[in-house]
Length: 328
Image (cartoon, rainbow, N blue to C red):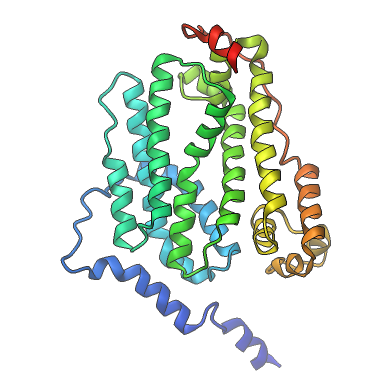
């Protein structure tokens, strides 16, 4: 009896073959011929600390998508470096917005170098990287001109700002040998874009004080304080509608993955202390039942509602904002 329990405790989390594959993927850039210099991938401890939360989210997502836990240990360093390079660019953009030197593309080149070093510079990953770079330019120009933007502009910006999460998830999934799923990626993209808007609502007061980019501030610039909250809710409804539309079109496999990653375990499983694989429960449900369950959980869990929106602070409107807002 004791021997059996001990054997179960000592059982490896992944097979020797899976661990070997993870180790080979981890060491691949170190064995490149000629050796890679990695000159454009340098980051500081500050960048790594700022990158920690997003990296942890991506690692958690990869584990729920099927990546073995101890294989993820090998993927932590490049994932953390990727997100730290995003913050290198973020800080460079903030300096440029404060009338500092141009942000340049060193951060973007560093990300591309990491992707190429691991053989993950796919067309999809590079497209997400371009979207992130385009968002950085858009944000800089918007902050400089206090430009009024339409609802469509802000929806695209929410997706552009969250491109880093898509890059990292694709990167980790490819390293782990997990299959791609474009339908799930679209659903996850909507959730991450909605998260960007929630973050701006929660951090509105601080962003106003710091004169930082904030989508709620952009609503104020476009339509004034009286209509800013209504404009913000209109952006949120667009994001929510897009999510529900793609949920209705998703296949059963993608719905299972979405529920696994973005929904908490059902209450009966928490009561029974079933912690490891709630995916098995979702996988047993017919597609129609699973879709109804997901929509109910999103609405019940308030994932489709904005948090309390603070009163907007009056700010100088950009020239021509009234004419622009009348057309949106």
